[in-house]
Amino acid sequence: MFLLLPFDSLIVNLLGISLTVLFTLLLVFIIVPAIFGVSFGIRKLYMKTLLKIFAWATLRMERGAKEKNHQLYKPYTNGIIAKDPTSLEEEIKEIRRSGSSKALDNTPEFELSDIFYFCRKGMETIMDDEVTKRFSAEELESWNLLSRTNYNFQYISLRLTVLWGLGVLIRYCFLLPLRIALAFTGISLLVVGTTVVGYLPNGRFKEFLSKHVHLMCYRICVRALTAIITYHDRENRPRNGGICVANHTSPIDVIILASDGYYAMVGQVHGGLMGVIQRAMVKACPHVWFERSEVKDRHLVAKRLTEHVRDKSKLVTVALPGNQLCPVFQYDPQFGDAFWNSSKYGMVTYLLRMMTSWAVVCSVWYLPPVTREADEDAVQFANRVKSAIARQGGLVDLLWDGGLKREKVKDTFKEEQQKLYSKMIVGNHEDRSRS
Amino acid sequence: MGSRASTLLRDEELEEIKKETGFSHSQITRLYSRFTSLDKGENGTLSREDFQRIPELAINPLGDRIINAFFPEGEDQVNFRGFMRTLAHFRPIEDNEKSKDVNGPEPLNSRSNKLHFAFRLYDLDKDDKISRDELLQVLRMMVGVNISDEQLGSIADRTIQEADQDGDSAISFTEFVKVANFFLILVETEVSLLLRLVSNS
Image 1 (spheres, one colour):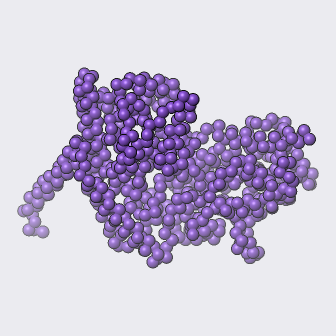
Image 2 (cartoon, chains in turn blue, cyan; image 1 turned 90 degrees about the vertical axis):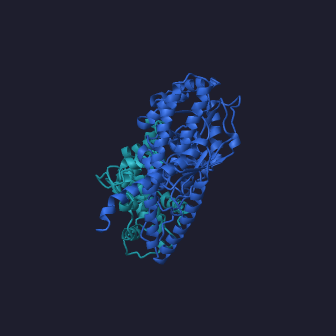
Image 3 (spheres, helix red, strand yellow; image 1 turned 120 degrees about the vertical axis):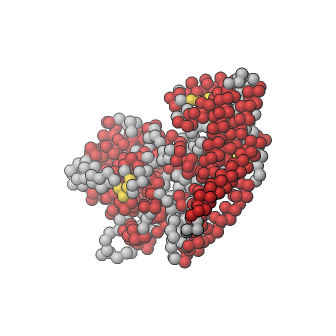
């Protein structure tokens, strides 16, 4: 130990210098390709290596569990209730039919046993329901060395724990600072760049600069998240003067789309850091930002959007409604959980979670344009677009919208159920009084 | 690892719940995962609001009554044990249980307990009788505003007339059970619920 003393400060200095150099080299290595839109393929290689490690880890866990005779918790992704779609009337008739010997067309008006229908339906939804299920993050069948996605994390073997520890070290001590540095660079460049461009007079030069500033910064941000994106059907990429709709899983969607094309965005005004970014961006490019209160006024929204689109010189708009539409995006949950439960985590916590995951892997499909037919009204058109997106992503087209996560259910749905039931018992009552 | 680790289900607890409710190992873990996902406050118990957040339950006309059934008298929180105990009432009776030892404690999902559960949905004041008012209340919940007070009143009167045997214009538990259809209905309900409760082998 005494030997080290005179060399202490020297070693510390050397260490400091080499780390800084390494860091800067990395930054340059990552930022420069981002500026030119080139990729070295490092991220894909990273992904492949990770996959191999995960497969090994899962095997090890399963083997370990079998040895100890543990019930390894395998998430049951199909839900616990096998539902077959039947209507209220059919089910109540079935309940009555099983007890009554009377013919079906002469069913009595009300039976004490009718309560069983509502009771059973209630119990089933408590055990499992379509909507809440969709809003919980997917449970994985293989373990990706992130303890947050595995409920059953128990000590299985030394090797596995060491691997997990190594993973933590790499993610928090190497990847995280790197990513934060990149994100910081990206965001500040975006804010500064767009503000500067904003001072230029409107014209083609301004647009050209604006486009490249936007693209460059988004590409840096994409690398900040280590997002590995596969674009499908790029020939369908939206061109000038149209509206593009995408599903919205998290704010990362914006970054992913915007790094591949220059869009004018439509979204809600945020406070804090996001607000600063939004205000800067709007100086260089005509994005449309709405207040939450304005959103409630559908006519105002429609007016502003049509004004924007009609101006043919403006760019394609991307609307990111908070609806449970199904993806143009699809995230691979193996590398990190991109799902944002906004009622549980704030934005910064969410981003930190993203940055301490391995990567964000997703696929983007560009769907061919859909034009409104002459005899369709707005709602039908919207539903048609929604189903097209749902079909592509292979997910279920839900009637509910994402707002249900937060708000209380609208009473109209309950009233519908009551109406159906009343029709059943009153309808029969009328038949009776007639005969 | 976060708060999740502190709420992991321990093996001994799992065994106790299995014995008490009769659910299988995998069903209990699955329902535990469901419990934790409903528990937004992450404190190991569910409040009434946690239940009301389930959209399909919130639109169920009898939703509030069903939620009440989970909470013991005067309490506002239910833990996982209590949650499972209530759910156990609806677990179908499997064949190998039918000929179980008669002297043992009655299983939670016995026919009698199931009927008690349904009875309690009607009998709000817990006086072991369903009065005309209580019946009207439940009927009103099920039909909403679509039927007039008069019509609803006559439906209630008719039902009580048909069921009442001791002339007290109310339905006692024994009379409730005697409404002959019940046992047969229960068999059917159980079979369909059994088919629906898919278990992980």
